[in-house]
Each structure stands twice: as structure tokens, then as C-alpha cells.
Amino acid sequence: MAYLWFKTLHIVFVVAWFAGLFYLPRLFVYHTEVTESEAYERFLTMERKLYRFTTLNATLAALWAVLMLAITPAWLSQPWLWLKLLAILGLVGFHVHCGALIRRFESRTNTHNHVWFRWFNEIPTLLLLIIVGLVIFKPTF
Image 1 (cartoon, helix red, strand yellow):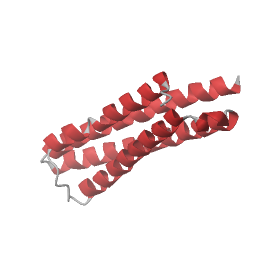
Image 2 (cartoon, rainbow, N blue to C red):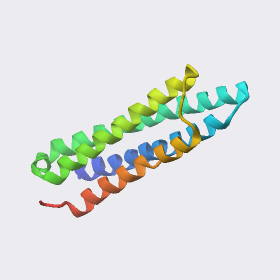
Image 3 (cartoon, rainbow, N blue to C red):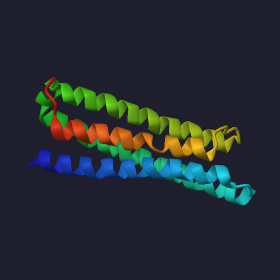
């Protein structure tokens, strides 16, 4: 029964984490298009708050995942899980890079335009497709 609660909480926090990772780059798109100082600062505030909230969700998703693995360590012998963890590592890299992009906006050294951010915004979607596909199909290789 504990496993099902951990799994439920893991899924809820993964969904919340992805919501933040979908929205944060969209804020970057709009941030590149503002010229007024007040609007620029407003976007910084929104991005900082969203990043902190998204980081909290990622941390809680990881906590519940670790607890699930503690209950069922046999999952660690499955190749699909290691591929999922590799995709999650890519997602964590994306998340950390978003933090670096916020710091670039803070220092006013961002060099990317709205088109770059629109493409950047697609990365979590691709990773989500890979992760969900691995979980659903559990390929055995």
C-alpha cells in the first residue's frame, strides 16, 4: 500500500515539475520581447518564483521515486529504468540550465532571442515522451 502512495505522490510532483519546465521557457520567450524596465523586472520576479517552485517539485518527485525504489529495488535491474534515469538526468540538466538563463537575464547578458527560446521550450516535451514511453512499454532489449 505504501508503494501506491509513493507512486501517486511521485506522479503528482512530476506533473507539477513538468508544468514549471513547460512554462518557464515560455516566460523567457516573452521576457526577450519586453523593452520597459518595469516589465523586465516583473518577468525576473515571475521566473525566479517559478524556478524555486519547480525546483521544490523536482525535489519532491525525486524523494518519492527514491522511496519507491527502496521498496522495490528489483527495478534497478531493469535496463529501461536506467534509460529513464538517463533521460531524467537530461531533464535535470535542462532545469539547471533554466536557472543559468535566469541569471543571464538578471545580469542583462542574455544573448538568445525569442525564436531560440521557442525551440528550447520543446526539449521537456521530447524528454517527457521518452520517459513516459519507457515507463509504459518497459522495453527489455
